[in-house]
Amino acid sequence: MDVEKKKTKFKLPPINLRVLLSVVFLLFGVLPIFVYGGIVSRTNFTSRVDARKIELQTKCLMLSTKLTRGNFLKNSDNREVIRSEIDTVADIYNGRIVIIDKSYTTIEDTFNLATGKINISPEIIGTFNGNNTNIYNKTKSYILQTMPIYENIDNQNIDGVLMFIASTENLVSVAEGVGNTERFLYITLTAIVFVLSVIIGGRLLRPLINLRDDISSIGYGKLDQKIEHNEYQLTKSISENINTTLAKLQDADKSRDEFVANVSHELKTPITSIRVLADSLMSMENVPNEMYAEFMQDISDEIDREAKIIDDLLSLVKLDKSANTLVTEQVDINQLIKQILKRLRPIAQKRDIEMTFETIRDVSADVDETKLSLAINNLIENAIKYNKDGGFVKVSIDADHKFFYIKVKDSGDGIAPEYRDLIFERFYRIDKARSRQTGGTGLGLAITRNVVHLHDGIIKVSGKEGEGTTFTVRIPLNHVKRRDKK
Image (cartoon, rainbow, N blue to C red):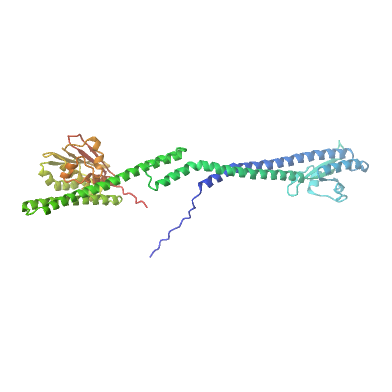
């Protein structure tokens, strides 16, 4: 046996809308500030470093010029004055100044660590080749600036190199201080935005919460209330849709109560008549056989009427339950109508009613023969029952490329316009006394309309009061099967 494995899909738990709104407000309120603040901080620090690099480049150029003019590399007598200035500049920038001659020997070092040593670093070699260095080492927080020292002002031959290594720790410290201040501001701003987002989110959701509470009250049976929440377009639309649904539910509830009352009344009336007839027989002594037979015939008629009501009610119940279970097949509609007319003709002949059938074209359609036969039978039978003696019933059939049409016309009293929509309601009768005399249950047209609607068709009634009635049925030739709702 094959066992089908159902794939279980992971479903996220319901999201709290208030929390979601708070998070969205928080993100859109704080995230741009964080991003902008970070960009500004980095840009500000970079600008400070660039300014320091330019400043060091200027200082190195000035020192290099003084060293060239003072012939610092060749004349050791003038070194003390310039050395003092070099130390001062190095102290100001918390850095180290190193002077190398053209033999790559360090002749001056403000840190006194490399004096007399050879320095062949790439920056020094590059400077002797005419490429000055001006770089920032982010990892070790320093700026390296090199500047050539010429033999004299007029001669541009490079005689040595001035290398200035300046610390940027003070810039980093300032940046960290600014960063700490910014972080404090961010935390404060985040807290403010969070509180505001919770408050604003709550106020924005208040109409939806009130709408939810009103909808919840409907579940306790308060169908008579009217929901009005017009704060937002969404809540207004939902309120209108709910009010429309409530109106339909109220109508359905009212219709159900009326239907139950009508069923009770209709079923009780024959039973009451039977009870009266039976009590009458039991109260009388020496009842003649003729009267006894007459009373029993009346009782039999009431029982038949009760059975007819029950059968029609069962038909309605079956139609309601089988909305998606039409057993359709290709049926000759002309032949179907002929069989119904043949079955009802004896009833018409008793009242001298002429029955005619007009076939404009042969029609074959995809229908449920049993249900459609019941609907057409009800229409023609009503045309006979509510007709005048010596009148007529005309039945016609026609079709086009999509639908077929059945018309049932009688010569009865007609139906006033205000009653034409009501006659399809269950147990509705225009003339209740006359309907009961003719044996009607008030369910025939309701059954007919249900059958026509099951076939995706429509039924209309027309005519003038006093000049008869015409029922027109339109049904598709090809029935499209509905998908069962899962």
